[in-house]
Image (tube, rainbow over all chains, first blue to last red; front, side, top):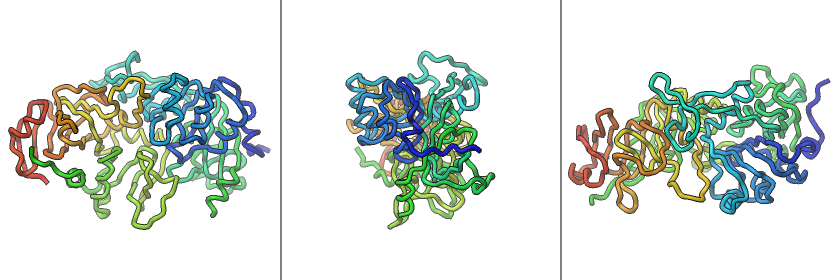
Length: 228
Length: 219
């Protein structure tokens, strides 16, 4: 019997080693896997490379890991904002490395990794400083930049409903990077608010098929909040 | 100098040029306020980079949902016919040429249609590009909505951008508080101008050559 549902977030992140590359879902707070990030904080892994659209908010989740000096490098499209002091001060003090990636290129690099592609040519960024030093090509008069796949050792993802095979549904715009990060990581760890029995999810509607998911954790607090 | 249009009037002016049934992305800042001027019966389908088609503003008294925000992470909702999708699909809609219009803010636009709108080129500050470079390529028409001059009075429309570029030769039209200007292969063409502004005044606050083919008066 396949059962990817674990008892706790702590158990789900226990084997994440120092120096791992972690993909973290979310666009701002929507889709951010708060419980898994808290468990990773408690677990103690450091020297992490993190791929996330943003850099976390205030002193929770990813921002707390950055504040504690546990993230060696961040790859993001938009790590700045009213609540992103943890990253901005770490960057200003030279305590964190940072690679700025256009958001669509970030998404497609993840998808390419998950799809087994060796890279792709994108018009995004052509002729700008973010393409400096990269291979380029002009096809039918349009300039393209060659971008490489972006693999993760682990993905930490928030979804809404899972069954024990790891089939996933998301909630509204909290879907964002979840599906492609599940594809791009060797081990995808997903926190959900609800569990469905096997067969309950409509196969026509499943967003992430369970093949892309290795571990599922049920976030009881989130489930409670949604019902309230 | 003649007082320009208010930001609200600028948003209204662009909205007037977006036809019913169009698929549109609205950038962060002033562009996203254009949403308020679309009529629901026109069924203009608004795309948000974080995975929403059919985005609409919250109604009076409607509760915010943390899983429903726009690109600026402000609460929004979805209209009937709308859909959710993941980031790779969302950006495929941009790069793949599926959006009819993209309305972006800008720091500078050059006479060739180069756009600078993501970085002020400051040292020791982490750059943050978000979806700006993806939005600048791919949409069938990229419109820029910005004040004609900076707060210090320097032209934003220039022969060559001085700030880091977002995209090369991507802008089709610029809407400012004073005029509407097309970017054409032969250069910039003013197609609309605020009443009370004359050609000399506009030329004086523009850093590139202008031709005039006026169709009607603003707003």
